[in-house]
Length: 172
Length: 172
Image 1 (spheres, rainbow over the protein chains, first blue to last red):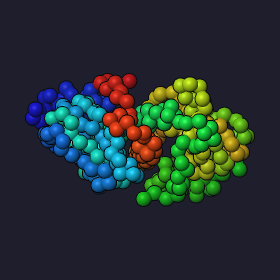
Image 2 (cartoon, each protein chain N blue to C red):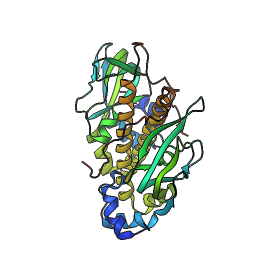
Image 3 (cartoon, each protein chain N blue to C red):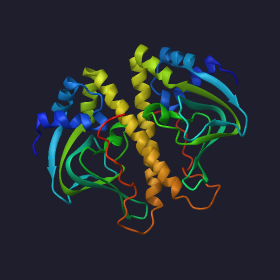
């Protein structure tokens, strides 16, 4: 499956991240996107690395894994067509939080932080829409993860699930 | 502690959510903010309700709790000065994901989704800055929660931690 602009014009509006984008904005985003095919077993990105791209699954399947403190690799979630990953690195400027490995032959589309910055400069309305969609998606993921944590909690009533973190006084 | 504009001009830039805002933008945000004092035991917002406000802790302490499927109330996190909550409802238009109860006498500042919309219309640059900050904060919270889930995983190697969710094809 090549980078087919007509196909993507139909595909992108069905993705949460690009909801609300009109035709010219979609065209601009499609022109920016890089397209790549991956074989099963290939690693798309690696936990701990610096990242500059987010990825959208056009076809195939990938598995998101995390290596925990004891060095064990834990499978977090399986993603298929229409789902995206790697977006956290673009917004919080931290290292990749997970390793992503291709499970079924996959076609992935990528968008870089430079692309997002270009949108910010050239098409602020499009940028704001994508940012709002991204915010909404992160929030929904956080809800699901929090819910999962709450359900798995053991019986030590007083425990706080999220450990207190150093309060952010200044921004990096 | 009343709503003191000079105090807030110093306080807000230290909050992740308002990082990068210049003086006129800060003034505009401060003018929008509502201010309220809470006694210990008071409930600020309730899981499952529709929410229109996010809250910023100016002083005191609150505890964020979730009632899980079996009706047990689980304490998620304790928040103090400079920390905020309730922002998820503003961006993903879903019900409150948690109940927040005041633990130590607290002064809270609130900002509504209407305030954010006014910023979007009147000061898009300020709006984009806040949205970027919010995105970054959600992403960091998601990293911490994911990390916590990965560490707590049991030995059933093949399990996917995040259950597959219905793929979003259209936006609400």
